Image (cartoon, rainbow, N blue to C red; front, side, top):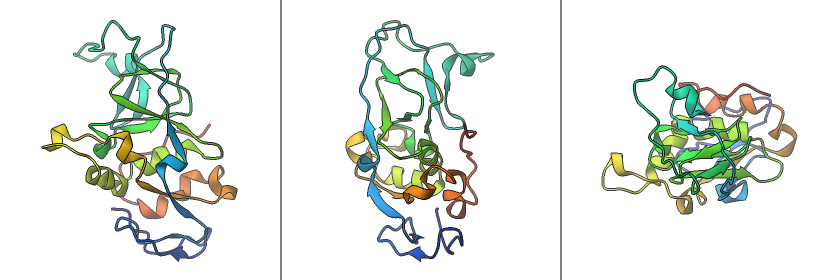
Length: 198
């Protein structure tokens, strides 16, 4: 669970929030619903795009790399006209595995299953920060709480619920410069890592 028990001296003191998974956020930060920083992208491609996979361990990667040397085959449909287009810098998540960390920022253009949710950043945010934030233990716990299903294997985090979840948003001066440190004090024990900075 994310536990910001002390302020990072680079960002000032913490401000108390009403969310149980955040003990506080640095002064000057805001808690905003995800719809304020990310919008759903529902765009289809008319071209022959590469397939992308949203993984728990590595975020978004080309499916060809994932299948290289693997014993299982590509299970996607031959007709991919309904698949969703992902642009570099977009985020995408697996609705049934978001609570396990199957979310990430894409460095690639490609397509994903229509069952996945693709998110395009609104102006003036760094998607790498959200890649890291959404994969922290505290946020995956919050994703689990907002998912619906009769058992864990059938849980689904719908966009209608994701967009109302709150995320801590850093102020503009540090929004694009120190993204790697923004969640460090909250997630010392996380096993996931953000993608390398461009």
